[in-house]
Amino acid sequence: MRKAQFVLGTIVLARLVGMEPARADYPWCIQDSEFGYPGDCAYQTREQCLASLSGRKGYCGENPSALFRRPQQQPAPRGQMFRRTGRA
Image 1 (cartoon, one colour):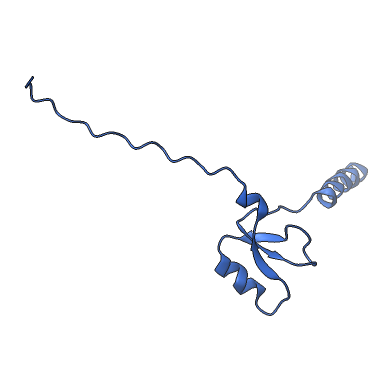
Image 2: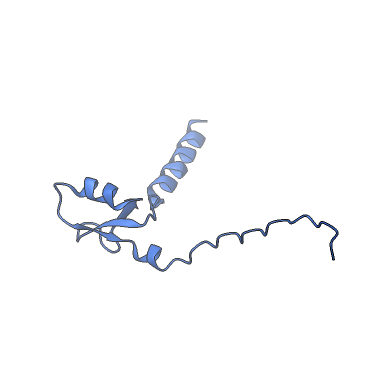
């Protein structure tokens, strides 16, 4: 029984170590040599990026993948329904 628990624990640990961390893909990134390219893209607004950057080296830039992302299409506006009055 202990051997099975050890094997199962080893498999789980190996999976956790091999997993890559989740990568945020927001429009603003801290860009410098510490984070590589395109940088730490974990910020929804430029203000959030600047606040996080305060006291550190680097700069806030737009996420290149967000710049060229296809914009979501807005639903077409519906036409107004007019009541017919029976006139010709």
